[in-house]
Length: 132
Figure 1: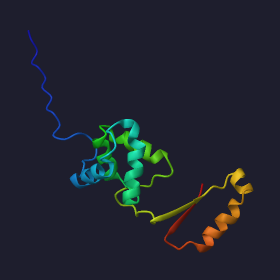
Figure 2 (figure 1 turned 60 degrees about the vertical axis):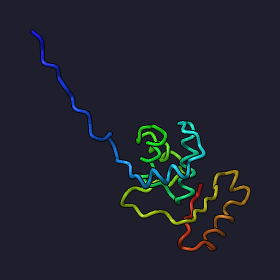
Figure 3 (figure 1 turned 120 degrees about the vertical axis):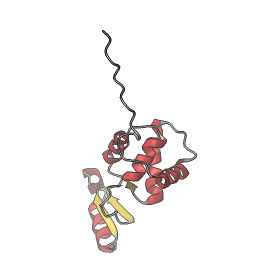
Figure 4 (figure 1 turned 90 degrees about the vertical axis):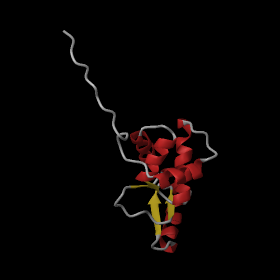
């Protein structure tokens, strides 16, 4: 006796966040001269953030599609490094200017505390200040 063959229908779309065509077009424009290799993902993330000011989840999905990587992997890389600003759907984007001042022991010995105080006094309210 033969069993009936189980037929599993294919998904109409891949799992995860759908990719907006306009975000894909932006990512392609900003990374056109980069080869589509996974080892260049960090460079592509820098280019998108430099062009847009921060990384949206839609941009990350477009990068995943462009570089043929899982969306989770692109999000993991972007969220691992502090210099990338990942903004989720309902979050407010960061200010356009970020000042980072190293406050480690060697930087403190070189005058980082004075530099940080000066930055805090002179920066506008639209400037984000971080100790690094």
